[in-house]
Image (cartoon, rainbow, N blue to C red; front, side):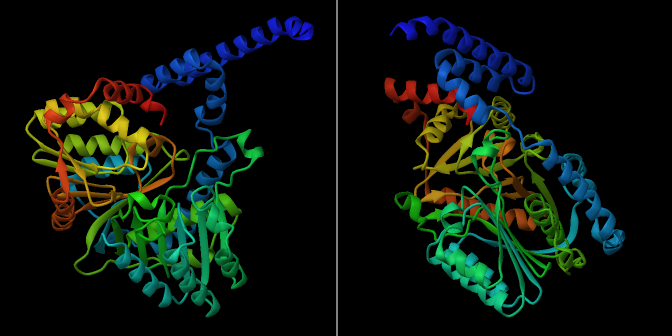
Length: 480
């Protein structure tokens, strides 16, 4: 007791100095997003001990200068080594009607828009898995798969078996799986059999005590990509998992949206895989760099936009805001996790008030109670502005899509939240075609038909406890 009383003033003073130091760091880092800065300061004020620990674990968006420099160098090397494979006259779409969107996406790190892409839009999990397995079974050269979650369930084992078959017949198979999202699979017997068959399996953003000292552990590779022989690509919201999604079965089925792409945009998806592979292995698959898919007759223009901490950190948020501002007639947004910042809320409300029909479709039952509370904390403001809010009833709507005036479409791996905007590695596809946008909108309206519309009466009748919980969650939403 004597020692405790003797050392306590020094410990308290040191802890206070550390808290003030962290607070100053928060202020120095917070010029871009004042709401996030204020939320962190509140955490440090009300929960100083917890706040300091959380800041060191999650407060800094650090991926390390080495990783950023390597990505930049590899991107330049890819451009130099494959310049002769890209016929400029045929591989850049001229889209004067969408020049603002094209310029913005290109300026923040996206590839140029590519013409001549045949797209297959899929919302059924079994259809996606059957199509992917068929393409893997037909592969001759290579299979590259990058996923946030790969479960060791029936779907995961079935896809793994197709990859194993491909590897045993001489196809070069590479799997890049997020170390958190796919942790159980990476330690499974199924994964062991893949490695034994010659499949290269690599952990993306591996988590360890040492890495915690130099970078955030919650920066994740949230991308979903498959590239087969460099000519067929898949991307969208679906992980390698059954619709029943065993870890959270009570919210099932998971309802997703995926694209199968044939055409020049596949090369841009391949480049994303190659840069991510190199970031983890210090090697890159040269056999994949000599493939440049040709435009397909009847195909549409597609622009691929990779985002994440190693890219322009505001790219995805800027594209989302630009898409909202473009709308003149209708805007339809589906997302499982709706944690908007002030700019997003203001843009959606402004669009509704200037006469745009704004339709927001979210899950009725979210697997994150905190995210659900944050989403609902914005309902009153959105409804007052005239935004339509629909809550999907038939499972967890996991599709991340946007259509603008039935002319512009966005299919992405990213949620409409601050984590996806700032922290996760994501990939988005912009489709500049009214026929495809109408097709995607038809899918979105199918979600609306399976939803209940949120009325003002429901929001107004919330109990005091519910309102306190939702509004308190909303205050801290910039930290999610």
